[in-house]
Length: 160
Image (cartoon, helix red, strand yellow):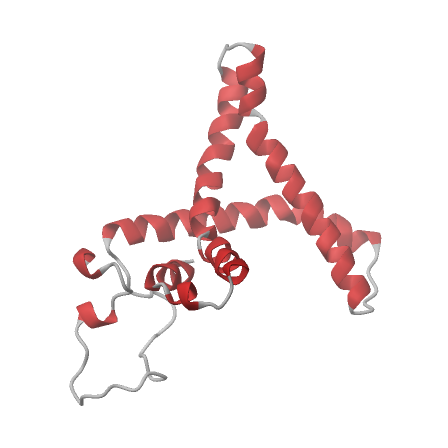
């Protein structure tokens, strides 16, 4: 998740040739923020819908994130079937049930990771924890080690 955020902030996606490509890249790279927001909204809205005494319209509005989550599972199921057909793969109804049952847990883990990455970004903690990133694929014009300001994505220089 932090990698998506860093690539988004670096801004190289702005150099893509078409507006459609730039918008698609923006959507994909900003997904951790949407995922983090969903991770906060869904449990909060469900709690409010059950506990809070409010007008029916407002309570129905609280159920909206759950409806969106259900629509996401339906879309994932459709994508799974399309993928299966496109590549000639066999699947049973058990595979579809696994996808539907596992989707909420998967989305929960994604939301937790996105929320954690967003909090770490806000704190300025940009180092990678589990993956070593030495920048070995980059050529460095000088023999000295780059400083933290040189390694920061564009737009985050003031955060370091």
